[in-house]
Amino acid sequence: MDLKKKLELKKIYLYRRFYSFFERPSGYEPYDFGIYEEALSGMNGSGKYNFIGMEHVREKRDDRINVILRHDIDRMEDVGMLETFLEYELERRMFSSSYIRVDGEKYSPADILEIVRKYAGKGHEFGLHSSCYTHDDCMGRFEWEAGEFLRVFGFRPGSFTQHGMGSRFIERRQEFNGRLDEAKKRTGISMTDCCMSDVLYHFKVTDANYDYKRKARFLGSYFRSFPYVPYSRGKCYLVLTHPGYWKKQRNAGR
Ligand SMILES: [Zn+2]
Image (cartoon, rainbow, N blue to C red; front, top):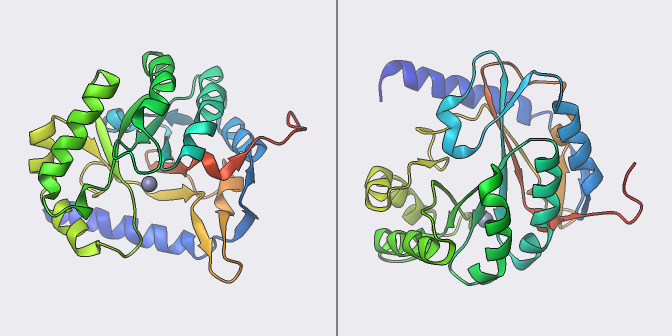
């Protein structure tokens, strides 16, 4: 890695640390879908934002605040709520990247096939959500998962993300991450955000924080502060959601 890149990574790290310090819980699971609607409508229409899919992250713009909307589909509950997210985004010409597991542990890829068929041609991206690093032969497993994705959905995933296991398998995960070039070459997948070489997020807004005292997931305060601070043009931000953590309130439409 050259010095310029190293410095850039260091700057991003400090930037994230600084703002993370001010992050506070602002709602516990299940979250009201209206919060997501408000966050997105706050960003939309101002001309300041550029929504890009993970596969097109290299097309990020210097004159806009670049935002990647990512959905991780970990469980059947996520499959169940995904369409609500995709439909809302599509109506506003905002496009997201959803990451699907093919390991069959919490749902079968066939359970999500209809949704992928319906939205893949409309601008939303669908990629592979992998936990191949839990297997002894992680590279072989990764190749199998990419092949399984192609077999079920009929197209190759253009990008992939990792399904997190907390601190479990951390060493194996790092080992796999050290072989990402090989993994990409073997599968033809071009982008990932599991190392910083492809995607340089300046900040992550996520719905997957955990409050150990209350034993509950919480939404970070930055989720509600879109589009105010600390976003700036030319930088890239990730908004990561797990649709199953959200609920559409019965009296929605506020
Ligand atoms: Zn996951």
